[in-house]
Image (cartoon, rainbow, N blue to C red; front, top):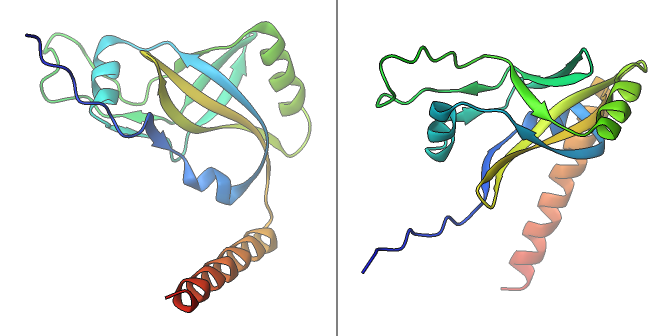
Length: 159
């Protein structure tokens, strides 16, 4: 009898928590990514960072920059692995037009916030975002800490 693969608890490969801290997230898109074989193997092992990644548009196409996918030690020796290469995003024309229109406005940027599995495909959550000012970041942090204190107090009270 064939052994079944253990199910993963989460479909998430990598998250960009910094993007939610630095930007007001407005619109989300789901994009496919053009990857090579060694990159998919590294993503299965969870060797990916989205911290400084962003999307740029060139000639009507979208590319992902700043994503670091670490090559595995067991990868083939004849493949030259570039962990920081440009990766083409697979979006339809309407989505590309919306992104291009928004990015051309002042203050908007396109940021990658999450990478995850959808069945056997790797998808990227791309968001249109507007940058936060320093006082907005402080206020958001203050609100988050207040909610945390309230939840702790409720938990202590219910014991």
